[in-house]
Amino acid sequence: MQPPSQQVTKLRKTLAEEYLRYLSERDARKILIADLNELRYQREDMSLAQSPGIWGEDPVKLTVALKMARQDLARTQMELNTMKANFGDVVPRRDFEMQEKTNKDLQEQLDSLRDDYKEVCKEHEMLLQLHMSTLKERDQYHSELQEIQRTSTPRPDWAKCEDVVAGGPDRWHMLAEGKNSDQLVDVLLEEIGVGLLQEKDFFPGLGYEESIPPFLRFEGVVENKKPTKKDVINLLKDAWKERLAEEQKEKFQDFFLNFLERRFGPADAMAWAYTIFENIKLFRSNEVMSQFYAVLMGKWNESVYIKQKETVTQLLKEMTNVDSQNEGLLTMEQLSTVLKSTFPFKKEEKIQELMEAGGWHPSSSNADLLNYHSLFAEDEEGQSRPFVQQLWEQYLDEKDDYLQELKQELGLELREKVTLPKVREALMTIDPKLDKQTLNSYLSQAFQLPVTELPEEAEEKTEDIVIQLQTALERLQMADIRRMGPREQEPVS
Picture 1 (cartoon, helix red, strand yellow):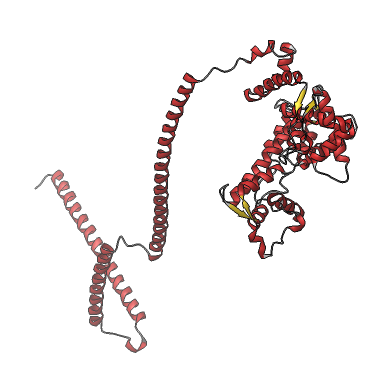
Picture 2 (tube, one colour):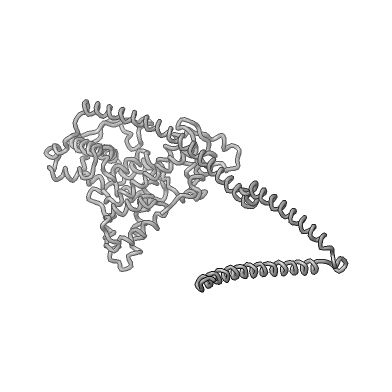
């Protein structure tokens, strides 16, 4: 008989084994119940899926069908996996087309950039060639400069003239102020010429040839009246006043001689004509004398002088109208406004030049006051202030630019012939605002035809009227030529 402790151990072991068997049987029972339920659910599903006509289908048949369906599913799954493997990198057509369009655009941009690059390369080559030619020119100019510096005479020491010119240093400084070397040479020639002119007591007559101006046609000798420079200037001013007051305009040279006869009598008129002629020919730096000489010798039409005086008078009138208080003062802003309204076709930099000539500085305020009457004052020798001189220089520059633009529009060399219709067309192109009267006056001046004899634009014989381009431009240079309006797309102030 076993001891109690061993029996208890054995019973415990047996109990554990039985408990494990119980658990195994319980799990097996649960699995069977689950399988049974699954079969029941499948049967119910199959029953619901069957039509009334095939109710109660053979389970074996269904089992076979299920097996076949599983085989089809497996085959379909394999095909699906194969397609995924083969077409995993395929994108939708819409995305493909969008990418294709983007690629096409980028390709076009690339082609355009390549073309631009080729053009830039060509320009680069041209610039390199230009750079090389510029270097050659620079070296050539440098060599010429060195040669000139080696061989040329030194720049004149104009201070040496102070002790030679009558009036001493003070007068020389007054004469030389603001003048370049070329102008100083003219001043010296005038000073030398004055001395020689005063030494002459008589002038030899030039005779009666056709080439001699009417006011100088004389045989023998005439007396040198030896007037002062101021006397000559005052006499010329009086001549202009009388000329402007004339109703019946005679030729300027005839008028000049008649004026002297009325002023000094027929006996002394010729002596005064020679005296004044020699003086105005000498004093090139004097504004009054040089302008009178240019008109007298036919280098300018007198309309140039008259129009310039009218412009100055009109400008002074405009400034006076703006001066509501009648104080003789304008602000810089008012001056700028008057200039822009009086000269609407001048560019901004030209207005700026006139402002500076009138006393404006970059540091000036728009409220700074200016005595505008001083802009139009003259010294005792008739010389205008810098403002009027700048106005005159701008007129000459603008006329040169206008005629140069006309030449470029015609596209001809100076020695080539040009017809009247071509000049008319070119003038209307560069200056569309030209009225018919002004246009005809320009054509009349260029072709030396009376305005009444100018053919109309539609007439065939206009092609027969030809002239050398250089001659036409020289004749227009003599006349009062100015722009009537801006060219198309030309900026104005």
